[in-house]
Image (tube, rainbow, N blue to C red; front, side):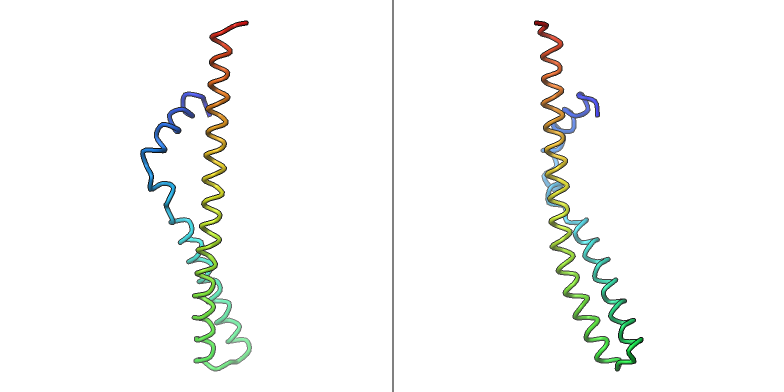
Length: 107
């Protein structure tokens, strides 16, 4: 990323406070994880020959539990990625500032 672009990104990011609170990634991860767990529970019930009511109860319970687990994991992953990107942008901005100062002040 070029230094000018890096400064632009650091200037634009504070203008969108919702960007940091966006839970779309966590919700998508939770939805997918819960649907996979639901399907696995249904298949397990079919393979074992369990009754319909018991299989559905278990599948719905597992789906809810894995949705909550997916929200937690998705939120942690989003925060980790945001912090890593912010640190990298700050480091790039600092290195571009030092490079600019070094080129304007020859020793």
